[in-house]
Picture (tube, rainbow, N blue to C red):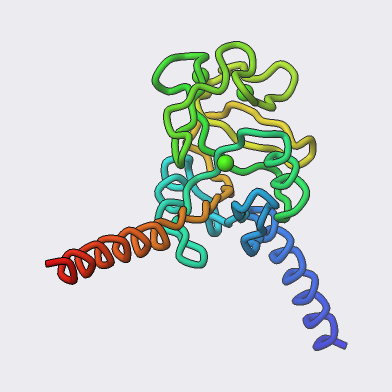
Length: 195
Ligand SMILES: [Ca+2]
Ligand SMILES: [Ca+2]
Ligand SMILES: [Ca+2]
């Protein structure tokens, strides 16, 4: 009886601890490709997750199939929906938006669109802030996406969050360079023959 009770208590405690641990971070998913070609991955920051700066640095250190990663930039509804619906879920995760340089002027902070303005009080090209956001409540300067609504919020960058990594296929210069090299070689060989 005593053994059974101790065992049962252990099971309950384990379950409680597991629940607590699971609630602190997301599950790192696999990169999922959108038809446009880019991959997106929800990444755990570990036990207490990571700040915006840590997420940005960690994303830049990742790669998928040789394609470098960066903290995700979301520039279309298709991209936003793909992230919200296809890569797993968590309460929220960092994406690469910030207005740290100029309050209320949100720019992309990584990837091919680095530096591009996407919010100046209204969407520039594309933005998906929740109603009433961005509100700069606590000098919020960094953008997170929330899964319950697929919308964005400005938050302080210093709390723990999961993050979304984007991988863009590297354009294929190899074929062009090889083709150019072939033309140069052909040209040289032609000259030699003529000479
Ligand atoms: Ca993007
Ligand atoms: Ca702000
Ligand atoms: Ca906010």
